[in-house]
Length: 447
Figure 1 (cartoon, rainbow, N blue to C red):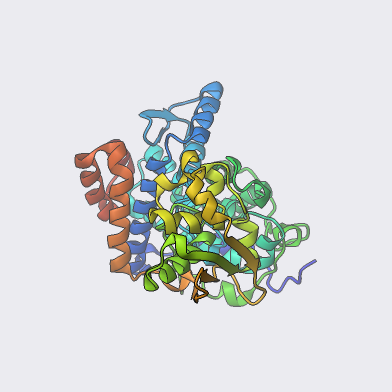
Figure 2 (cartoon, one colour):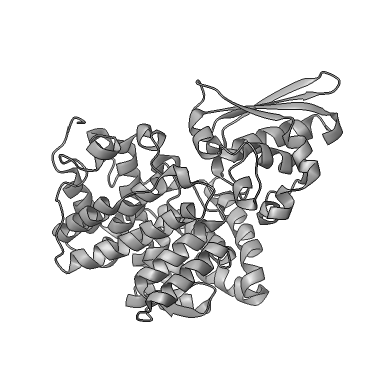
């Protein structure tokens, strides 16, 4: 059993959730939240017609229920929990959404779906919507830091496990729960918290994001009605940390309200698992600097962390979805085509003989000295020239203004095919000032 260094971590997080003064959150933190929301909305709209989304829609139709919140891009409403589930899964279906190392996963796909569904249903304003996201994100970061890298290493998909708790905190804040209710909400979410990395490359990985969103909504609604749970779900005997690795860290808890972590969110500019991005960038850097041609490549050696290889572990790929988790495919595709967007991850693109030929020359190896996103790529030409580049894309996160520009371009690219040019431009302007929206259902009606 892990050492419990602090009594009441669950209650401390609940108190932080409900008592934080939004006026004390700096303006640039809200700016980062708006960029994250724009990015999330773009990938959610782009993922609306993925097969797993239609299966979840059929599941929701089978269950029926009240029309409370919108399923994005489909012009229909489902229950608030069903909408959170479907929109959450849609936004992670393409694996094109943001990542945060401190969260050990993908935060926005676990937070925005539930918050948007609740905000539409209860006509919450944009300021409260963003505040709830910021606070839920910090709760997730705090739990993840205490859970530690071993939590992810043993097989838990932190996007789901940590996401359940972050979503519950965010939804508790949005619904105005008191501290005791927020304690229960964390307990209700914590006992549901699950998700295994074994399902990567299947429909269940994006399902995890949807379930975390759905569970957070459910936990907050039940807790508001007095539904009880353990009051020490994180630190207590047989609780989250004992069962799923980790322990209370007072140094982490001391950052509550002092540091937010949101500025470290890394948005994606390649439509694949984030662990493939450093190898892609390193290979492209060599290819471009040395002015190489595909036919002159003898071999490509990729060294990366054990953590990366537990996620992006597909040595071959037979479907577009598997391609997103294959370092050899992602590197080969980037060098052959130069297009690493959604188009590259179709089944027919993965089956391309030219890509398969280059993949056969790519080997991937673990390096015990590397951590997280770190990768080194070495390319040898047929003439015997060897070039090597090290990359860690988490050390290259753009500054706020540059990030806003990049995500605006990405949003246009993803949303115009769904909404058309005029509506996309109108929506983007609204997203730039979402904190001024009096009722978020008005924003949803624009989509």
